[in-house]
Length: 333
Image (cartoon, rainbow, N blue to C red; front, side, top):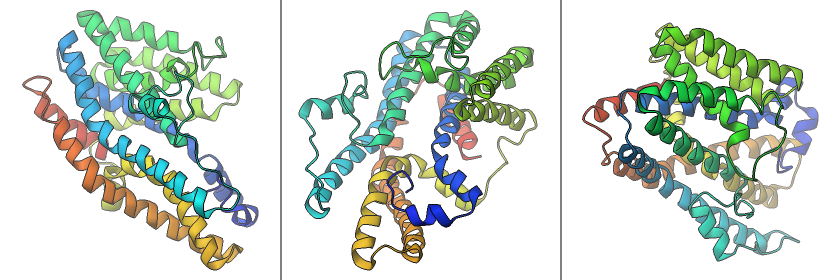
């Protein structure tokens, strides 16, 4: 809302704490990356990873993620075209076939294309996280822990700003540490001997975030610590189990994919109907939140839920069914 300039009046008059939360809502990405590392590690922890299993895992993730993502691409393009007809001085979006194809395979940034929807950049990194992580497990086999430790401490080159730029635009290394923090928290929960290494990893990221005043690093380190404490104290299955929060968690992927397009459309339509005052900014903010949740829920039911069912047809091993169920329980908590 704030990013699109939809609530400029509200931002000027709102309490400081609310302004801070709105302006730093993007830090939810840090939480998402760390949580992703934790959950994916749970899914793969007890599975003997071979290269065949690694590719089955990637196929499973593809079936899980692609249909909602592809739907969101189409939705963003359609809303961009519609807005060019109804919003003054807004031109028709220039979307090429090559750009769309690049999006379908999560490589638009790597190939130099702009995101059709600004939120898509995180998914491109997530897919790279999955691929590199599972390949490390497959290559490392019984020494996977050693491979992951090396990867974790190599990832510190970015939060400690020993490296200050990416190898290539759109590649995962600058954010790799966040995913690995989640993975390290999970592995440490399963093997307490890793506690000193987890502590050193979290501390290094926190020091980098503090010294260079990077909130993303601080939130990542804090999230990993909270996850590990929750797991160690047995609260990983019981904390935050309010029904409304479980509902939002279930639709979170669809909600994330579509909220940007729905927010823009909702405010534009609203202000055309009522004009823009501080009161109407508040009213349309509430309506927009409700619209985003409603659309997210609809897409979850119509698109994402079938894709989840389809992905579960790809079994990793005989214990996969039980592990998947446990992983869903962790994700819900």
